[in-house]
Amino acid sequence: MPTLDQLVASWDGNAVVMRFDAVTGTWIFICLHDNTLGASTGGSRMAVYPSPEDGLVDAMRLSEGMTNKWAAVDLPFGGGKAVLALQRPLSDDERHGLLYRYGDLVESLQGAFRTGEDLGTSSDDMLRVAERTRHVHGFDSDGNKVDPSPFTAHGVLSGMRAAVEVVFGSPSLAGRTVLVEGVGNVGTRLAEKLNQEGASLILADIDAERAQSAARRLQARIVAPDEVAGIRCDIYAPCAIGATVNRMTIPTLACRIIAGSANNQLGESGDAERLSERGIVYVPDFIINAGGAMAFAEIDRDLDSPQELFSAVARIGETTGTILREAIDRSETTLAAAKRRVEATLARARAKSAPAPA
Ligand code: NAD
Image (cartoon, rainbow, N blue to C red; front, side):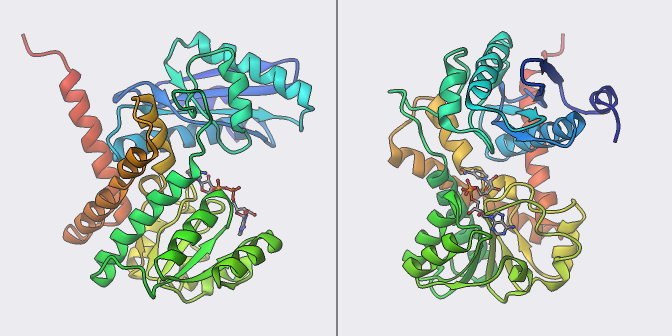
């Protein structure tokens, strides 16, 4: 593994802010990947990492993912992400102290980075950070916390309908078989919506009790997590962990469409070609799972009635349809089509901000 300074020197992002929190032995990495469209904005992840370098690599990758996400849905924010790389689990007091110091660090960046909750941090954690900095999102105009999951699930559903229309000729999900992997915050809501639309559900979760209780409520079939890749279905919705679509699983996949909320679903970018060769339509994760981020962005822009937020998020359906059709027309992967859209949005913004020729 390269050293921290080698990693920073070889990164294509704008800046990395590093802080070692001596009290807790935590490395804090704030990666500012791009600010072409606006201030770098992304969540704060907290986890125990095997080494600080692993934490930095994760922050860099996630930060670039946020650049893609904001540009793909054309919202005025740049890519950024923070990782608080713990060496060991912390006591509550230690955690609270770390969050306050992290808030001071975010404040010192004077708005160049805006953040919110992510894996390993909660909205209560973010309330602590917000005691030290104004640059925290995830709260409405009355200061109440907003859960991103319903918006993320709504975005996934909109993207799924668009994908079904491209593949089967009708956006209806009635009678379609959908395998939802991970019935947590997003997966449960997605499964409920799919059930209401008449889809036939298959659920998988490493938490067997959670899977059973959702399956009972939604008359769904359950499969073991390690059987997911071979299950025949119309749509596979990864809503648990990343990299489940990889060179090992792709040959066994028995679905027509992949459309779910998990981040970084592909093991590597070459998997997009492998899927395309198998005729499986992959809806790029950074497009279809942008609903929560879009809702927070709209709240930042003072739009906060739930109805307005849900209709803003439904734009994911149109974007998905456009990308999938472009990929077909140009005989390219859906990932390539999505990335081209990102580049085009960034190029337009750069051209607008370039000084006029003398
Ligand atoms: P969650 O922690 O609430 O739910 C995840 C579920 O997946 C849990 O029930 C867990 O038991 C299950 N799980 C974990 N590993 C599994 C495995 N190997 N096989 C099957 N099930 C497994 O998380 P969430 O908030 O619902 O988010 C789900 C995914 O979507 C995550 O990858 C997250 O990064 C991504 N995402 C979430 C949001 C959001 O708004 N919450 C936004 C964008 C992306």
